[in-house]
Length: 107
Length: 124
Figure 1 (cartoon, rainbow over the protein chains, first blue to last red):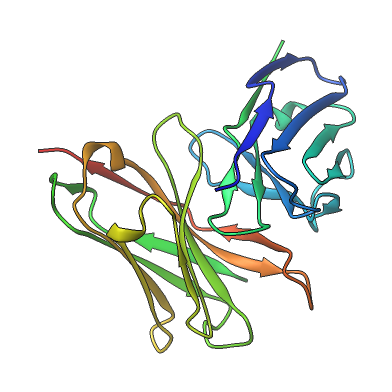
Figure 2: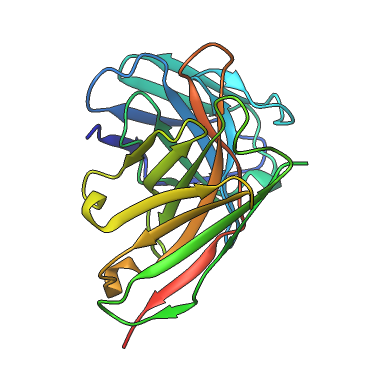
């Protein structure tokens, strides 16, 4: 199975900050990498697919980059509604696997 | 509007078999390369992919759980069913079903949208 490792596991930031979350795959996955946002008690929602494609309806302050084994999710200017848990997921091969999540909290 | 809704027992006993049903609307399970996945999340923990099924009946399972899982679909009812045998307290969590989206002409897959999830508790 491909292991996905996110860093950091948690992060405190303020409204307006620029934030970057990293995801590393245990082997090359080309650009088969998706990012999800999850708020407490809710189902995850896709933000970015294929490493850098913004899902329709997602604000442009979210962006993704990377290929191979190293990927990043960037939020250019944090808004109050962005405080949530973010997870990466590889779709290169089954079993599809997720990172452990990064909890973004208000400073 | 595409929606998915999970249903199943809230409480199961250890060693029992649980059957979860995902009822979809807004798309047809028999059209093109439509697919549905099941994903679970123990309380406070990470998401774990369990299985998927596509309209051509292609199936795939979690490496660690494959012997306990069976996924099937009833296109006439717009339902995807997941059966998990020999339930254990560590299987407690929220179980989600989600549509598999794909970039046209590629194997770039992602999960969207997700159902609201159904919480399954395993306890005697």
